[in-house]
Length: 164
Image 1 (cartoon, rainbow, N blue to C red):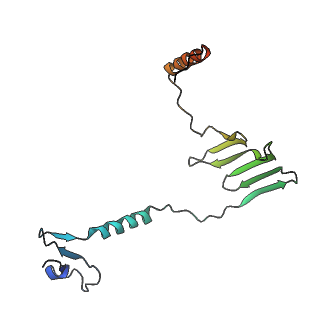
Image 2 (cartoon, rainbow, N blue to C red; image 1 turned 30 degrees about the vertical axis):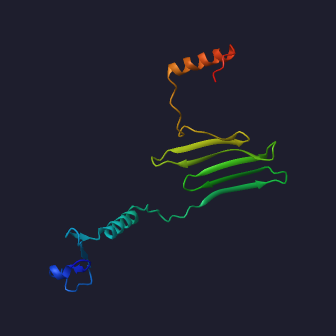
Image 3 (cartoon, rainbow, N blue to C red; image 1 turned 135 degrees about the horizontal axis):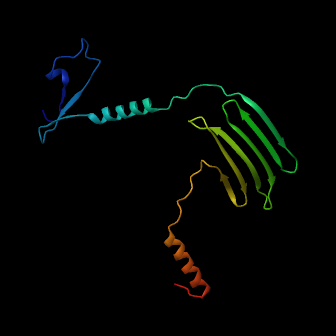
């Protein structure tokens, strides 16, 4: 039986009145004599089914705009303000920067899962995007010994000590 395929119906009675519902193929390994089932396809199918079930279900609610104010001037300055009925609100003003970039300043608001409003104010200019909000993560404070090391390094630089 080396290299031949053995059908499940050859060793067990059919599970259904018609055998077209389930087709499991067992192969016989000639070197070890063990039966192997091709479960890779079953695992892939199960993973695909899990991904399909885990896909977020979005509601198809239409969001209405309550306010949409836009101004674009010839000199490159602009402003816009949008407000939607789902709690999203944004207002931005922009001017042309010294190097030709657009400098922006504004804020946006949206509703968090717990029902509170998250407000983010920002400035975007030649120094990059600089948001400020209570919802943004902050770095942990440095331990006291780090401040001591920074002071020592500053004193060494002032004294002209250089490490190569």
